[in-house]
Image 1 (cartoon, helix red, strand yellow):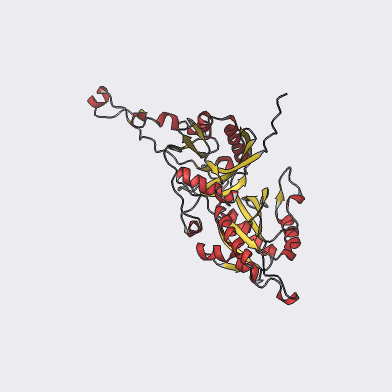
Image 2: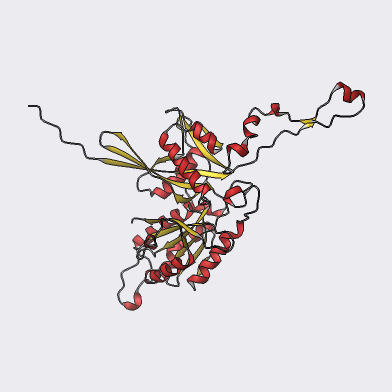
Length: 385
């Protein structure tokens, strides 16, 4: 009897990517001009009837129907892979020791040349590549990052070769549905549009960070004075996470370990670490700041209800707060009273304990006037030493 070979151990390959969106950039339409007829010329006047002349732009006929084709008022960013002859979302595999969050923003910039900030997580795709190999691709909502000092916290990326990505395109959701090759990518598009219809697409992250690992205390008075060597490594990895979310304000508890955890990102991004006092007052300030772009009556914004940025970038109101672990329960109580839980969410999604160097990311819906921000999603990330 022929021996049966032992099954190969299952392996998982992880990758990260983003569904990047922006406000649809209006396409200039050709100016209508008077219809000139021999009779109007003979009478020395021009007929009042006007006709458009779309012939100057081959794509004008399609773009002129933008209202019907793009009710969400947004565009999404796709890439074309010549090796597979397909259109898909930008994504790629992790490098050795790289965090998923860092891989997502790096791969998007490598494949498209567009620096992005991450927002709420999307559906995760899982499929088989070969015998015993499973690929998991984690996606986030992405927006175009503002060109400012915060991008200096990210490593310089190499543009993907043309043999890997030869074309990129900003297209309407309807056109994206026609272009996307794989059914799973179209499901992701459906998820993105469902968020847009429910006004859950434009969010801002509130990141609670636990201080990185500290030197073991010799006594009760020595607790948390400074970071250990591993804690310094954690703080450098936390720098990459905060940059990926486009953090624009930093707050810290008075203990030295909390301030040292945020210091690398503050120095590189040119941000000031502000002292943390009353959680309720701080949350109110952040919520008011995030809601400053709201304009429900703006005709350009339709059901999303936000002011579009002509450059395609969303104003960044992401905040990182490094708290003392013993105050986390107090923060959870304040958050439960300051955030509206959306249908399907439960208070248990807000963690009540964190390990050193761990980040809890709360993705909040930008509030309309007079309402609380809704909790769209929660993530937990811990950087390893």
